Length: 77
Image 1: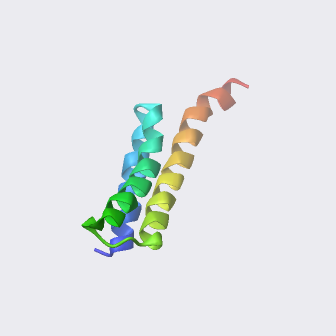
Image 2: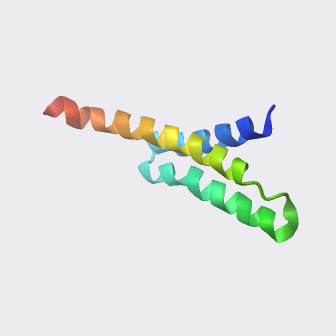
């Protein structure tokens, strides 16, 4: 599997958990920054593209969570 695709999937999976518990939407974003921070300590290679791929996955999942959770609000109006 492509490394960037793996980062995207992890960011998406972590943030889509916001469907079950809303604050989990942030976990994908925190993971993206935390993973690159750990890599900067010498445990891997720091790559901006890895962080961007994870952030993209988290961003798309967050959009889905916001759409799904706001549907009830929109239906009420």
